[in-house]
Length: 318
Image 1 (spheres, rainbow, N blue to C red):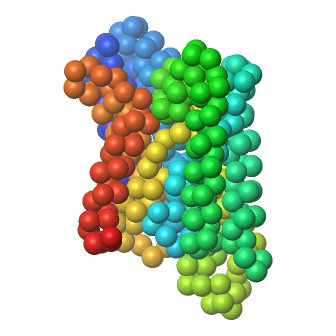
Image 2 (image 1 turned 135 degrees about the horizontal axis):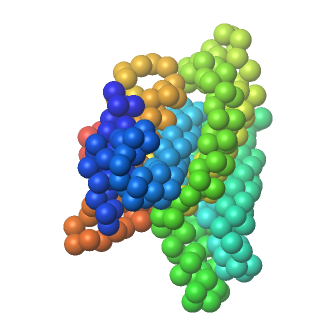
């Protein structure tokens, strides 16, 4: 059902824009059976790369969020809250403000900075040779706060043009995405998913505690480190492709668990839910009132804020 919903929303998104196309025109263009050459050119060359980028970015964030929430045993365990996304933003801002490099350099800097931030958080959260739990979340929040201050200083230091370009990247956007953005995101996702699937059962057992998992044949710290690095890789891929996208990694796994009611780690359903959420957010961004075409990162931030307030109110957490 998630896949069918995503396909239907994708068709609507491909038909949305300055030039509107009906669902039948979109499907015919995708199948190569359309008679409208203008529609086929716009859909296949401009809008389809944007949609496919959203699918892989949403899937990467959804799966990464599921892993972090499972390992930390905390519903707030997501890369944007733990600070990994902020770390990726630091590398990107450095490239934009200090070196004024192109999109490829910014993406590579965001990827490398995200990995470096994750290593720092893991090392600082390690206690008695083990990581995870609330300590991982708290250390990540602290590192994220420090990096957020550094990002602000970098924006103040940069010139007006560089600061504006950095702010545009920080908004998180799918605009002007081409197949050059899709290919790295697809290859990275395809390379990491097998590692995640092979360690999924062990990660589910870790939710019962290290002692019980160890009795069942799991090596806790090795499994935890492997899955954390896989989740960091997914986060870095998503951030490099579209910039910081908030709350998809937080809400996707929780919605997936409610939809599937499965005790297993909801990897596939979280990935699909993340893709659907990002496509919905992009659709809302383009169909916002008063013809305001917002960056998708702003839309996910607002939707995620409402979702977080609802979650806290529902659980009566003070």
